[in-house]
Image 1 (cartoon, rainbow, N blue to C red):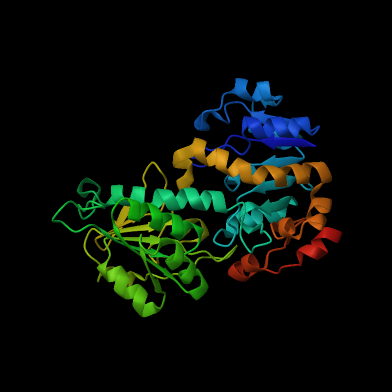
Image 2: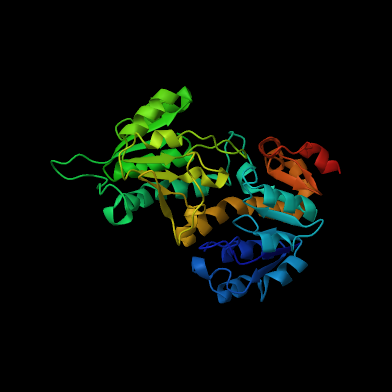
Length: 372
């Protein structure tokens, strides 16, 4: 199979879909890997690294899209890239379609087959291709939140860990999954007073058993959330409903009760955000203010640490990419129902229920798509 990897063109996105190590593996399995010139530079990989791995370096994205059987990316295809997708071509990347009707329409019209990293599952009910970036984003969230809290950036001027005689920052983390757990660990490690909210008692028991001395946990009700948000210096939104739009858990009305200059960090922004006042920002202009509250809503947070993120994502995606290339997408998905859960679009049909529900579109079963 010809596997193509174009340069990411989303603003300040420095990751790359295939590392030189992943390219070497694919070549050793008999596939041809086409890398756009300069695609890896943001993550610290040179064209020479790819040539050494056996990949072919191609000048333009147009050539890659025109030639490759499978396109492997990091972020969702941008409008100009979606125009280059063609019928029968396989797209393997993050999609986050639920809050993005324009992308969904374009993918359906292209006739391509699109498998989304964020909806591939595993035997334990996890999301193995979302997890590494969730880990990175979770660990980044307190770091960027601490920066947002600095007075020069419009924040309250609060130091996360305080100093002797001065209380630390109060941090509320909404969601106890992968993002929330990593965010709470780092915030607690910075010395903050951290409370994590979740609606799963099983998860809360786990967090208490493993991290009981590091941070507190509380069952998430509307009242508990409102109380913690009101008292917090920083709120980290870490909720996820796989493939679906994030629920709005902090309303604009609640901002008026928060401390002036408090920071909201919305890690759920890829799925539409979990704060009513969230809107996607970029690393070039990451924060904005609403009603005196500072919002950090960068839609590709892991792109800030592109080398770490590329390596972590590649470790997770490589086995799936090789299965798709070795077997073809139909056989790979037939052999692995967890990979089939990643199928979002095929031949002009939507195949993921949560996206259809969010956008009001008809959906067919992925099992039916396999046979079409």
